[in-house]
Length: 306
Image 1 (cartoon, helix red, strand yellow):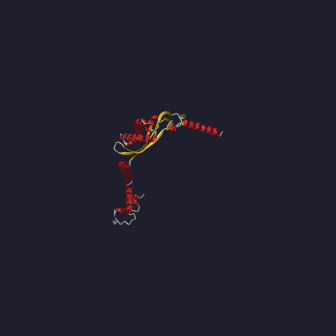
Image 2: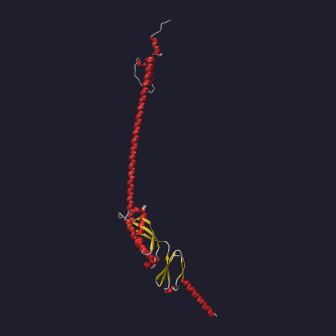
Image 3: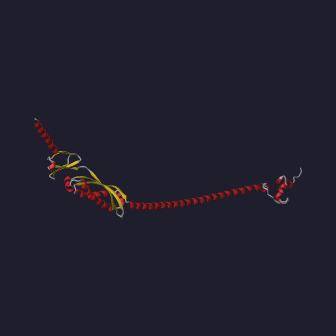
């Protein structure tokens, strides 16, 4: 009874092993190549559960899993020379997928690293060619997209021969090399200094124009003001002369008396002025006449008694 149980258990285990060896699962991110005695007999590209011949250890049916997703590899510090002779450091990456598993298996034995190594060499050469036809500014302009499409188209045929499809090529970085960067910095510095000097020269020129215009306006304003002042002063002098003439015409004796009093006021202003004049001088004639000009006139022409 025990022997029968052991035999049944062994048979059950063997059947389970056969089933396990005959089943494989492909998920949505994978493809499966079925190899029978080293030859490709089938490729499974859809996710699901599949069957194969058991005993893969005897090379009956082996399964090689291939990626069925978008993959990427990077290429760093590529030194490229642009038109003009300058060198630049470029970082790029490639997005690709395995589109033909049979060809991929036949070309590189299904090894992703070997395929990327071969594509890396083509990408390096394509970047050098594309950059060599343009100046550095092209990689920083709208032409950059065109450059990347050219690189993709150049490496596409080589990738296709490996069973790969290049989805995209992108530049992550484009920098000047250290020596070119220093030269460019010095050139930009000189250009900025020259531009600053031009701006200062234009500023000085504008300042001179403004100053000259202001000086001219000052001279014109002063001349106009002086002219107007002379006109007003002349008008005032004329009016003053007219007033004096009119006053003199109305009463010559009073006018003469007024002028003498003004002369006394200006001459004897209490500032210690010393004057040597004869007492009989005409200058002092009103000091002799206590009643002023009208009293003198009355004394000279007495009225007859009534």
